[in-house]
Image (cartoon, rainbow, N blue to C red; front, top):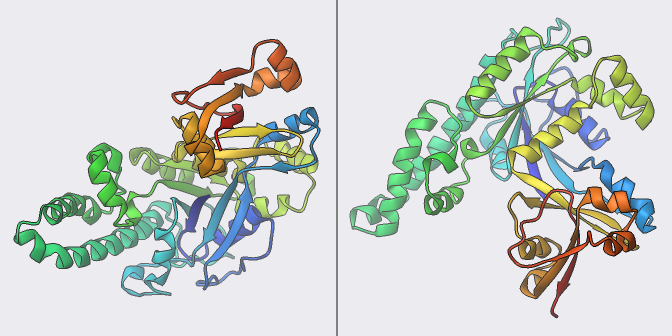
Amino acid sequence: MLKCGIVGLPNVGKSTLFNALTVSENAQSANYPFCTIEPNVGVVNVPDERLYVLQPMVKTNNVVPANIEFVDIAGLVKGASKGEGLGNQFLANIRECDAIIQVVRCFDDPNTIHVSGKIDPIDDIETINTELALADIQSLENRLKKISKTAKSGDKEAIIENSIIERLMPHLEQGHFINVKELFDEEEQKIIKQFFLLMTKPVIYCANVAESELASENDYVKKVREYADKQSAQTVVICAGLEAELVSLGKIEAENYLKELGVQTSGIDKMIKSAYDLLDLQTYITAGEKEVKAWTIKKGTKAPQAAGVIHTDFEKGFIKAEVVSYDDFVAQGGWVQAREKGLARLEGKDYVVQDGDIMVFRFAN
């Protein structure tokens, strides 16, 4: 399951956003720093209207969307990597996540305290990034101490590891997120993955704005987007307070309210889509009388590996996959008609699964 860590300075709207994401009050939200002490974890369905279009076609009562796990981590402050505030105990929670969602305050409100006493989203971002980078530097320095003797003795693996760390350090010292795919080859990337570095994770900057500014970008948001673009990161504009209110409305009422504000899609839906795009993820679908279910895979995944997401035996015994595109399936009204029109095709081991493919796997027991 995809796992995203929600981070930011205290009092920027992280817990409010988490409450909206999980349609719950599991995360406490209050107007004072360090409100969140223990990380809150919630599993969220990935919005996918296609599943509900397919449901009546295959005559099932069960719809199972894909899921994302969100972790709401206590507010970080300057010096967190050295134990300031609530300390670096929370950085370990971020290391376990696939991506980082950094909530950034992009609204003025004298009634909501800012931990540094001023609204400056770029300064906020750099404070968080510096702490993440410092934590990584400390982690790598500890690693260097462990391998230094073996590297000096000529151990090949230790020498390679030492070289990789030396190349990582300058980026971390500048507080920059690192795109390891651009800077390191596949074997080096495998080694880096074992370091569980914070600054190698994909990041989404979540610009939290006032409801009145949701339909247009204020100067704060423009600065965040410009900063994110330079890092090849993504920016999502959201009003955490509004999202929390929307969960109490019915679906149609919520959609109409957003349209009145000049917004077509909820911030939460945009954020989930951004997380999928950022991690090169997509879904394929299985659809039958038992259930309609979405399965998450990496873009470029071939049919046997896609089958393995359901069960490892499916991948080991893979023979063929019967595939219909979502559009063809809906246009024809189901499996029977799609097969009659020759739109259901058998694909082998080299087939690259496409987003929205509806699939049935044939495998040997």
